[in-house]
Image 1 (tube, rainbow, N blue to C red):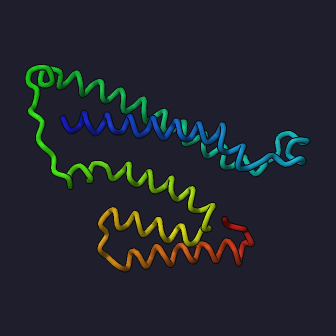
Image 2: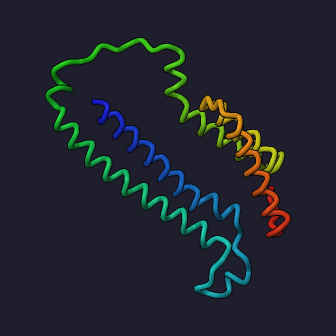
Image 3: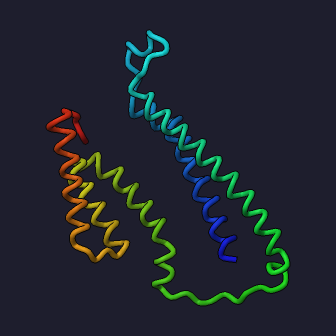
Length: 171
């Protein structure tokens, strides 16, 4: 029975990720990375949109394959457990507040990532990354202080590499 629930969650998650990749490819990518005049005049050249667009297409295709394969295995599992599903309806157990919050963690992390998207444009890459990584580690109940320190050092190092070595302007 738990296998059916896991497969259903996988199908829903992969489908939502596929929709997000398609929406990003169609609407967000063109708004964020405009075509250059040189890219419009020549055909077959790489543009700033080429790699992110290709990556989004690959993500969408892989999610589609995952949805189909999980649906096939879900159908097989439902046929296998058909007698058990129709024979008895299990009584619902009352869940404690902690269990409810535990089940909501993936959705809370998704909301935090959307918050990160807004924060990065308002307060910049470094500070928003430090805030968001700390929030996610705290939400996952990470008690090892060195993991917090490692994420902060990693974020700072990335910031320095991109801004000082590669001369890439970060938000």
